[in-house]
Structures are given as C-alpha cells and as structure tokens.
Image (cartoon, rainbow over all chains, first blue to last red; front, side, top):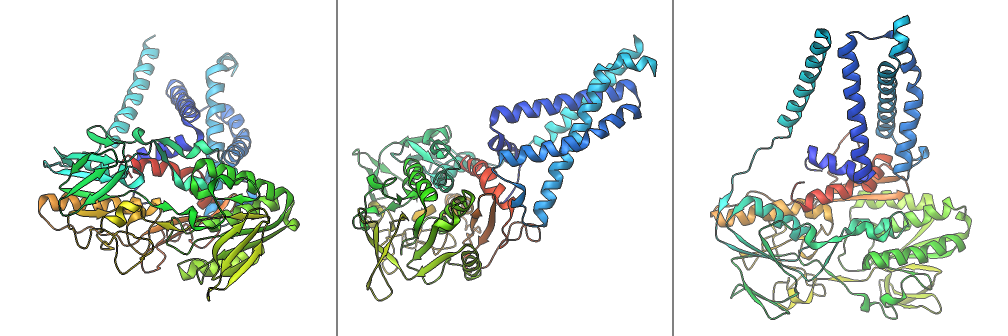
Length: 119
Length: 437
C-alpha cells in the first residue's frame, strides 16, 4: 500500500461491513461516545460504583467483538498464524471491551438516575 | 437552571471543538493544475484506463480526454478467485464501467480497431477516427481459450471443468464443478499456461482453496491433488517458489513441472500435456482447472506496437520497463496487462504504474523529463487456505519488497494477510479506480 488516507480507510470499512451496517455502527458508536462525554461533563466526576459494573461487562464486549470480526471475515481462531495476528486479535478484543464498558457506563448514567438520589 | 445551561454550553463547546478538529484533518492540499489543450486518448476503461483518467482530470486543465472501450461491465478481477471458491457471489466483482469515470471525459463505447502511430489516430469498429496527441494503450489482454483443443467456455461448470479467469459467470460455474469435486473427491488437476499471464498467484490460490475446502468438508482422504505447469518452478520469484513447494508438500499437492496443457477430452475426463521435449503425456482427472494462454489484443499486434523480438506469439507492447513509454513512438504509453514488461499483470501493478504514466504524460505536455519510474512492483495476497494468506510483494529483480517490514512477514501464512485480501483489497482497488490510492 502506497498511502493510507482517511478516505481509503472509510472505504475499507464500508467494504467490510456493507455501507448501511458500517454507517449504522459508526452512528451508534458516535452516539454512545457523545452520550458518555455528556454524562462526564454533566456529572463532573466518575461514579466508581457505575464503573465497577461497566468493568464487569468488559469480557463480554471483548468476546462479542472477536466473534463479530470472525463471522464477518470468514475466519476462525485457528487461522491466527503469527504475532501480528495475535496483536490484531487483541486490539479487536480490547476495542470491544472498552466499547462495551463505555456503553454500559453511559446507559447506567443516563437511565439509572433515579437510583443516584439514594447514593 | 444556570448550572444546566453552563453544562450544556460546555458540552456543545466540546462537540464543536471535536468537529472542527475532524474538518481540519480532512482538508486536503489541492494540486496545481497544468493548462493544456492536448488530446489524450486512452484505449481501455479497465483498472488502468479508469484510474489514469481520474488522475489526469484532476491534474490537467483543458485536456480533451477520450476513453475507447466497448465493455459495459467493469470487473474487479482480484475477486474471481473468491467467487470460484464459493466465498463470494458472482456479482461481487461486477460494476458498471461508467460508474467510475469522472465528469469531463468522453467514453466511446466501441472497440479500437486500428491504431496509426504515424498519423496519430485511433479508428474504432464503429467507423469513428479519433486523433490524439498522446495515446495510452490499456485494453487488457485476450484469453485464448481456443488454444486448448477440445475445450470451449460452454463446458465450464460441467464434467468437472473449471475456468475462473473467463469472468464472473464462469467463476461461479467453476465453483459448481469444484464444489462437486469437494464432495465426491477424486483427482484434481490444476493448470497454468506457458504464456505470460494475469496474476501468476491465482492458479496456486485456486489449488490451495479447493484443497482446504475439501479437507474442511471432511473429504481430505478422498482427494488427490495435482498441479501441472509449463514452467520449471512453482512461482517466478525463487524464494516464493521454494515456500510454495514446501506448502504443497505439507498439503499433499503433487507438482508436475514442464507440463503444458494442450487438449482435454471432456467425456473421458482426460487431459493431454506436452512435456519439455514436446512429448504427449496424458493425465486423467475428476476436476480440472483451465487457464488458457494469454495474448495482447489483435489491434495491438496489427498496429505494429508489439515487441518484434520478444513474446512473438503474445504481442505485448514494446515499452521501456521503467517508464512504460513506447520505445519507438514517444507519444504512446502502455499500461496494465498489455505492457511488454517482465512482471506486473496484476491490479497492484496497475496501482503503481498509473502514477508513472500520469507523470510521464504530464511531463511530456510540460516539456520536462519525468523522474517517476515503475520498478516492477507486484503484490499477491497468496491465499493458502480460507482464513490465511501470504502477502507476497516483489519487484523486477525478484526482491521481496514488503510494505510492512517487520510487521507482516511476506512468507508467513497469516490471518491479517487474509483480512487484507478478503476485506481491504476491493476497497483499496475502488479507491485506486477513483484515482485516490
């Protein structure tokens, strides 16, 4: 590859997931991120209690992300052939874990506010 | 209430800052355009012609660019291997030629019938004569199926015959025949031609994929895999040939070198090869994959653009292997499969050749020497099983030239290389067509 531009990268992801699914996922990710930033700015601190539950969701996020990538690319775990493959796989898993945690934290903060009063 | 407002303001402020940062990073530097009234004709609107047209439109101001190509469909040819292994549907490789062409160019949907390099005109089979100042020949190549005696394209998909190069429909039919072989087993015979060919890795990929799919289906014990080729080694690049030899050993594929396919008997499922001494050898098969000899289109050979002393039976354009400029006519360039250079009949090569031809042309218009040159770069994501590939990249000197040295090993079967072939390659190809990669 001669150069990797943002445009190429977006085209690559559209190709992987299909245009509709990719932009739906990108929108969902953006929404969750914006929601996360919103609750951070609003609450002005991190609720470690909520964060604990978010952390517990991380392994599920990791497994879900790996499963999703494998299904989407006609691959299986046995195809992992070298160090770079392990790194890519770990990046996918970490991405899924962090994404899952942010999602759970944001949902808790947005929709479980009534419980906050008793804290 | 005040507090809430402040929070909102902070929040939107943050969002706006993010958006501004994104816009800034997306801003691109505009390239300075060269003003010209040159008439540029491109024969062929395939990968090379289309990518070049898109780049020239951006680079030149006022040029009259005409493409001559009768093909309505644009084919993403690197995908044919995946179609022929049942991994992608036939329409995965098909789009429309006009989908990729920029505004401001003219497409003549006719075949180039004659080129007159002295008068600088191209005649079409519709009777039109198009004058040019600069000509780029990028018509692709011809698959000479008739050269295999006893074979015709209507046989593909039946009686254990596959031929994936012939197009998406034939690649899908190849999968019908190969899919049957995977179930019933028997002797699988995979061939390649004696001529120069598109993507010399594809015959190997098909072999590896069908072998892997049969083993996955639990029929590994039922298949007997053979690879027959006219060449003396399994791949043009020695270090890669050795690796393929080891992989064939590991998978149980028997190589037969110096075997040139001459004819088939479809009823008896028997193939006849000529060996190094021209003596006939017969091999029975249950599934055969045929790749026919490949040559330059007739119009190139009849217009006197071909090499006189090289590839006499194939007719590739006589051009400098570094600049791709014709050696006898300095207003003509060759691009893609038709170029008479030692390597590079792949889409990856086209990606590297297009900027070289573009700069050569613009330099000629500006009256300067171009410093850009093509070093023979070719890339082959060599699939070795479903889910794994080797990202093999090399140049004219048979040197490996990995894009990601130390990260993606070229001779290692990796999942990431498979990901590149399966998911990233078409997107990169599409970006190339639009002149953006």
